[in-house]
Image 1 (cartoon, rainbow, N blue to C red):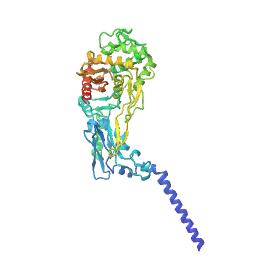
Image 2: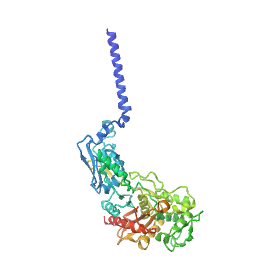
Image 3: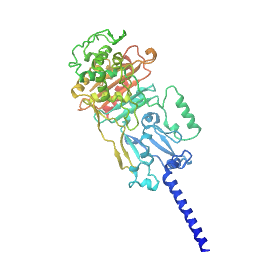
Image 4: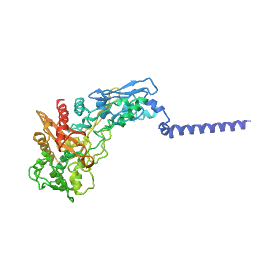
Amino acid sequence: MIRYIRRAAAFCLLLLLALLVNAARIQVFQADALDNNPANRRETIARFAQPRGDILVGGATVTGTKDTGQQLRYERTYRQGPLYAPVTGYASQTYGTTLLENAEDGILTGTDPMLAPLPFWNDVTHGRQPGGNVSTTIKASMQRAAYDGLAGRRGAVAAIEPFSGRILALVSSPSYDPEQLSGTGRDVTTAWSRLNGENDQPMLDRAIRQTYPPGSTFKIVTAAAALESEKVTDVDAPTDIAEPYVLPGTRTTLPNEAEGCDRASLAYAIRFSCNTVMAGLGVEVGLAGMLDTVQKFGFNDTRIKIPSGVAASNFDTRMTDDQLALSSIGQFDTRATPLQMAMVASAVANGGDLRYPFLVDRTLASDGDVVSRTPERTYQRAMNPATARQLRQMMIDVVRDGTGTRAGIDGATVGGKTGTAQHGVGNSGTPYAWFIAWAQAANSARPAVAVAVVVEDAEADRADISGGGDAAPIARSVMEAALED
């Protein structure tokens, strides 16, 4: 009898061990797979079981949380949603997160290990801390000036503090209210379908996720390459580039909208935007030299994050000389985000030192303690200080008596460059109007802001009139707001 009891006990012990092994297998080795299983709603319920932290602009919250009393309890709300949507993105119970709501999701939901009182605390307890806050670098007055300036037209504005890299404004138009996507149910799915179906693409963040042909604003980069390579040693001396200019290897003549471009100096070519001179200089610099310069400004870099991902601006690495000529005036396959072109203006304004752009100043715990700060750092030395000084003066001349006079601000030094980018089949589309600029107060030792504006539906009959007429006033209003702070 005892023998059978022992056998039964051994069998029960074996079953217990098997149960423990299976429990360990499920809880340890399969835990991640089960947590991530779409059928498992526990993680989703836990995610919305406490209020989400807030995104701040100038110390004030631009987001909030609503208690719905439902299973997914707390729902995201937005204050002035369309104004700040290109900064915040959306946090949806149905469609996930984008932009800062995505990049800083760990802080906002309380799952970031830096919020825990001890290392590995969240892993051990399988809990989460109260949601933290994300303080941005955006200045409310500049954001408002950019948004009102675009006035619902398709386009974007990006503004940077040149000496730090802080992003001061980031606007995309037309915009949308991300609160429409926050919850669940028919209203949310209807809003999603409507927003995605609109021709104007209101959910597209044109400031950092859309690239455009930069047109004549790119001539600042080509001018930097010509000076850095010493193809031009005197900006006021005539060049050897005659008008008409025939694209190399073709019979195609490149037109000028401005007069006086025949063998014009670099300074004249920038002031009045001579296509022929700048295209010819790009060919003289050569593809290798142009690539060296454009990459120092950030083109072709797929790794830029602010912390949201930024679309890479493009300058082709393999081209024929005729394609290089067009690329050197911001056409052919050359494309740039507004943020990228703001970086170009910023590098010129900051003496050639291009600072890495960033949108998050610091992250905070729910009690206000600082969790992390974004350090200021150099992205690259885009050009020598001497080159930057010459480009600064040329950009000042553009605003003083060139194509960008509408960007001038009394009592401040302003440098700029207009641009009109052709697009569409046979350049049949309405030109994109561009303006890049920087501004420095009379009593300041350093520029306050660098800005890039693109307007997609600008009206123009000739190159640069659109940039000077449509985009420059928007840039001026943003720069005025920066100088007033």
